[in-house]
Image 1: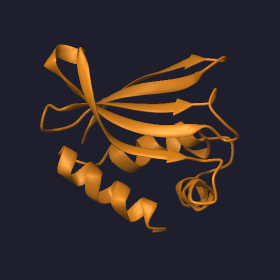
Image 2: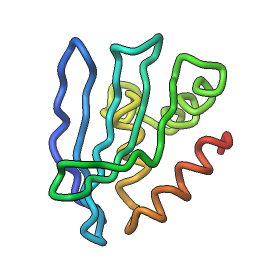
Image 3: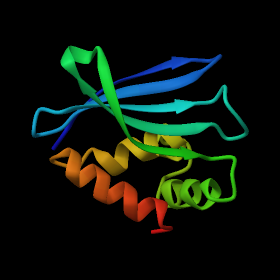
Image 4: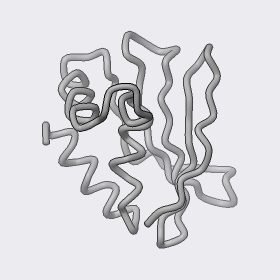
Length: 114
């Protein structure tokens, strides 16, 4: 199971969390609330000691394509729990992944409405 770091929140721009997969790869899961209604969720893979990254998932929650993703993410969450917000829900989705390939596969299912 992946190691989930602290949730860091900045009320002006959003929140993020670092997740280290079993493979040793490090992800930064981000909920940017400064962008639009609902904000934008992203997952980036840290590379080169954290000085560069590769974005592997992005979803603008304020768009018609993003609203079903938000609903699918937060549907199984207990009201008031960390998983009831977009960042916590996305971390819940990826924390059982072992590799970046697993994360990409889960995000593809999520983006397709599953």
